[in-house]
Image (cartoon, rainbow, N blue to C red; front, side, top):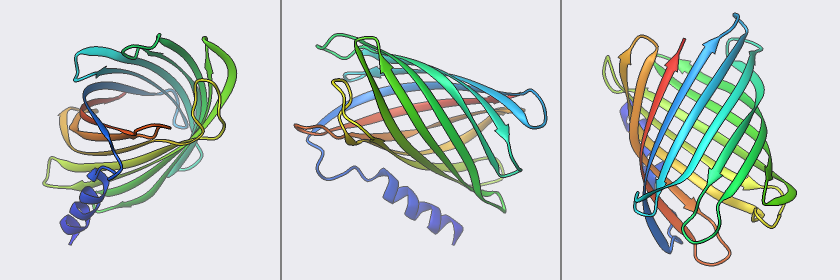
Length: 220
């Protein structure tokens, strides 16, 4: 029954919206490192490299930092800063400085199955535009055991722009859905390769990005 439930979610999350008009193949790499400072306080750093336009070029580089505080075993919150360089084909590159607040809740932890929610509120500023852009995003991830070693990992995350600026389109901007498998590498280290679909909502034709995504998680 657990496998059937997980496969049902997998099917739902990987289905691209029918309104997609343009397609692009990407390769994304991401590295996450989390370090416990005390029993309650931890820091996290990450880097993401996104190769776009049929994975022909580095279209985006993201560097993010975070400081978190554990309120309880299942709830933690904190905030951080991110720098994002976006270099789309055609338009000029965009340099973004992003501050954000984050709430994490472990909704289910039972028999190796976990359900985790991450809610973020972002304040985005761009060197090319002086206006402050606000964005809300909510990430929900399920991990379900496949065997004694590996887990199925699926998640969904809509990203909603709360206002409109010359750089940011208002309303539902992106919707990401992922399915992959966790592979333990060493103590506290795992790789999660999989398929990510990113639907980009635009004023003209929408775009659907088909992404080979490999994430590396390190906990110290």
